[in-house]
Image (cartoon, rainbow, N blue to C red; front, side, top):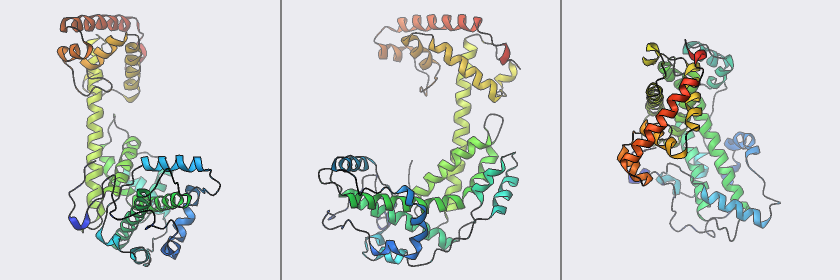
Amino acid sequence: MSSSTRSKSRKAVASAPKFDGVTASSVAARLPAWVQCDELKVPIAETRDQVRSLEHAAAAELRSLTKQRLRQEIDFIGNERFSSAREGKRIFSAELGLAERQTALGIAAIRRSGVDLPIHLGRLCEAPLLKPEQERMLFERMNYLLQQAAIHRSVLNPDRPSRHRLELIELYVALADWHRDRIVEANLRLVFSIVKKFVNPNNSFDELLSDGIVALIRGVEKFDFDRGFRFSTYATQVVRRNAYRTVVMRQQERQKVMGGLQDMDIDIGEEDRESAISEKRWHELRSRLSVMLGDLDRREKFIIRARFSLGSHRRVHTLQSLADRLGVSKERVRQLERRAMDKLRAMAGTTDLAELEG
């Protein structure tokens, strides 16, 4: 996912951040005083199950966990103020003051969606909107916690694993996720309002909602809280762009498969050519095509998928490009393609597609 260019004072830390002058001896593997502040009591209590105790872990397990953690990057949006030794105390000194969840907000979101949805989905939208200062505090706390986790990760040593340091990293990441989730919850009604505009017979609300929530989470992780504008402005663009891309990609995938079915002389009807095919029939056709392709040999299957841009192939391959890949002549690829198409037409002719009609 792309991110905006950051200024030197608010630089996004890369996926493998480097901390100049930071060593294991300069960063104590102990709980700092600010972690025990009142503002973190609730987050710590609610994330307790996510933080493993390594008190009885053997040395071999600690080495394995250290290597595992080193393979997992910790991304965050950095800030020049985070380098201050007293920054943790300052960040968590002010009261966040999040409002209680409200059932009425969730019910209202369901009604405004204009879609017949299970009432339980309304629980996703019960968190009140954030005030500008609350939003800023959550982003600042989330990224500061991730930075602290990244610092400790940078000095991990599989040859000398530290139980306390591993536990600290787990705690910081869990607390960061808690703050991230508060931002996500407060913006879920925005996702509802955006994705409902993209609903059509081929794209259900729940699928678009699921994709939209994933896009929102990624947006939270990439948002620079210190640039002076509200997250909702950024999130609207992220979720809308993701929904549009999802709809377009699914339509393109349908057109590829429909084209392949037509080339196999399967009559899908004029209505289906206009992309009015039902979800049930669409999945049935895909399933039948997948089964038929499975009966081809390895080279035939590869050629058909590449020629019709099916599966993982995102573009139509030429006969020459396939010849180069397979190490045979262009004419040989043409013969294999013709043989495969003959097999598919024969299978289509013997397959009962009557239940797919209408």
